Length: 405
Ligand SMILES: *Cc1c(COP(=O)(O)O)cnc(C)c1O
Image (cartoon, rainbow, N blue to C red):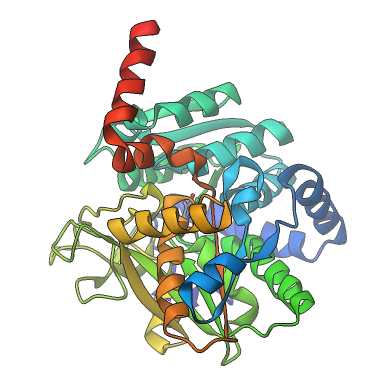
């Protein structure tokens, strides 16, 4: 298929058993994409259930405080379930139903993708099982609860470090045994072909709306900024401009606690990653010399992943997309800044993009324009941000809740 590789990255590195499932999925996707009825169905559910288009606003107070360029914010976090992940989840669950599948499976780290798939499966009438590392399941109790509310079965994964990368391996294994009636919805623009391209197409709506909404403001776009975990919000946001020379496209990785091994999730903007193969695709990974995937760290669970989508890796090397990083502390600072100045709480992931946008805006001349994608909203992070920014009173609150339970 045309979109098997992005430069040297991408491909389909899976066992023989999964090839027929991937072929069938790719063929169905091509057919659905050419079918006006599929697009009509997608458009209706986007409008009436996801809440699209999501707003874009001029961050006037932030612009003044930063003293430079105009800052605009795409409020993708106002999409149903709180982030862009629902765009890919709804699209793929619609495809699953079209293929006659009766169930979907998904992996999840902090639970945001699991929640989006659980919601889409409930809405569209498919069974849903979510694989989640047991360490993640224990520390993300609220999202496990929400997924179960929507009828999903959450299966803890006990292998490896019992986090996201182990959940992906478990889900791929499970899919090999169940694909006749089950579709696997991968949570980002990565995995074996055609998943990266499918995720990009379903997330492109974010960028397309942004271009239309910016045209209404009369301001030209000089820079677009998005955070990069696996890369789905970034590739969707940048999608309409990937083939042009402008604007500048900036992807922001998690700088975590510092540049030491295991302290961050910097794959493109530092020198620590290697070309390798994991999770069914070839890309740049934080891995050791034997090809073992290493642990990563970020205060935001969504950016805490050691690989990066193949198209982003390729566009990073070609220079079309620039990569920067923002640390845990810079993300918290940006979160506070936009909350105070604009009355908007970024998700911790998105706050990395916010931090880079602040840096870029400060360095640009007035009148220039930076558009940042707020990929998610911050209410999901209260247990982390409140502990980081107001520790004592938050712990007091948790104790009193436990005492009263
Ligand atoms: C999961 C998540 C991300 C990271 O995933 P990408 O595929 O890189 O977009 C970013 N922001 C939010 C709010 C998320 O939930």
